[in-house]
Length: 138
Image (cartoon, rainbow, N blue to C red; front, side, top):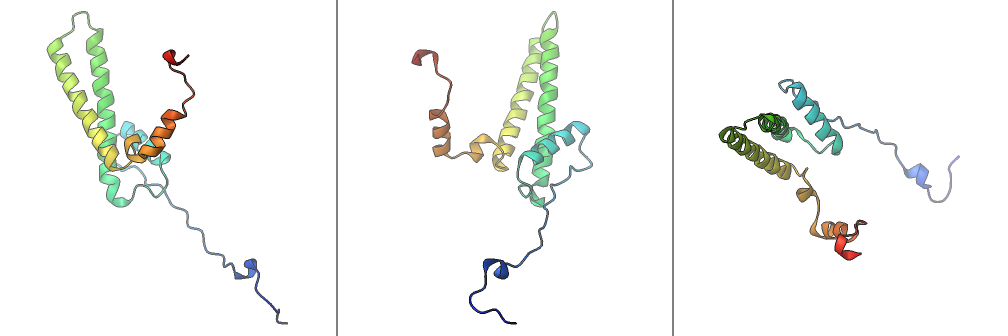
């Protein structure tokens, strides 16, 4: 029996197969600390954010983050000594600055930093809508 009239939305709709996007797995050559960083970054972004061509950059980003943490530990160790070696502390500070610059550049190029993901309009809105009052605004 043929139905007369227009077809309903349900009749028109065609079920399409749902494909589940897999998040990229951490490369085997990363250390355990670097792997933890990889997974943390990948899990915070949409599943399709890191395409194959960005994996090398993400791998280096994770290495720089872990290196920056290790340099920070060395700085803490140096500062805890009875007599601080300021020459060594200066070298560690330079190392930390280099790591920070590399992290900043890579995060911006992969669009995972705040600067890369916010527009001027949304940033201004965020500032204007803050709930914390400044001491001089009471």
